[in-house]
Image (cartoon, rainbow, N blue to C red; front, side):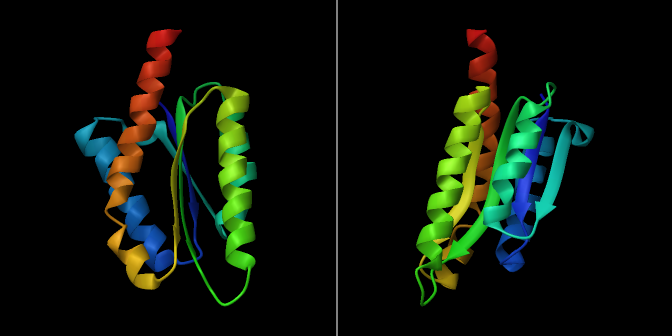
Length: 138
């Protein structure tokens, strides 16, 4: 399997360990060769949709993983970014029939984000599982 990973660097103290755990899960637990994983880092969550779209267009890519952390602040910005990203991720996977695991944390506090870093392993596994199921359907 070939996997694309888009990582938002904003809130990097959350997203970097998520990325590292996802890569470890894919390579160590699921034996995906590291050279079969394309990692693209972008500024933030709102910058991921175009990267996911480009990854989805690559024929060899079987699935993708989006990793970002959107933490609520004092303005409505959180709501707009969360909506844009969740809608775009959904649209990419439907348009290309390639799964995109939604590893975009949408949380109220730093503590909530930190408590969810470990979920990255599950997001990575979910992307791979969906790709396997789609291959079985083909």
